[in-house]
Length: 247
Image (tube, rainbow, N blue to C red; front, side):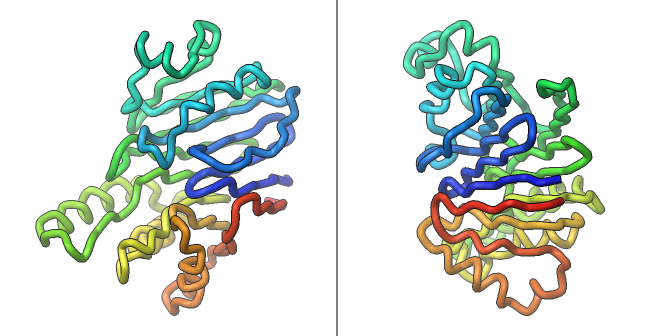
């Protein structure tokens, strides 16, 4: 099966399948032209400004086959709906998702899109999606956010919470994973991705959330521990970069 993938920016990616699109965590950058005949699923892992842009609701005007999966930490009420331009029609196509839940959507051919959520160690959720016998994982901000300047207690708590959540992916076969590789964590930048690769059987990894330092991807690939994993680390480096994967 062929999947087309476009890196939009930061944690934003577009996946194109035969019958639908998955758009993850768009906040800025150029979204490629979309086929109006295909369903568009827009995933928003949480409400931070680098993962959520209300402009996504404008997509519905041109693409009425759009369904939104919005993390429950984003509060949508009458005031915000008016501010974001969310009409009653758009609202009927929004599914609010919570951590550690399961959801099901069907594409135009009535094929199941099965969605599980994990609880982020920062805010919102991560997505584990089963579709066409393939599994896609988008971490959002679920990561091992340990910081050199934080207290030992904070970092120990963070490690415990992350390991509890990521262990739910133990021995899971993941075809494509999108996961943070954040240079702000200095020498600990790779702890979260390392643990993901220890837990799950990942085929392709698209590093994300590296801000304006894409060179961190090559640093990770050169790291000796990375070579022990069978996962293929993709060279994500610039907005608009595209791949076609046969999986």
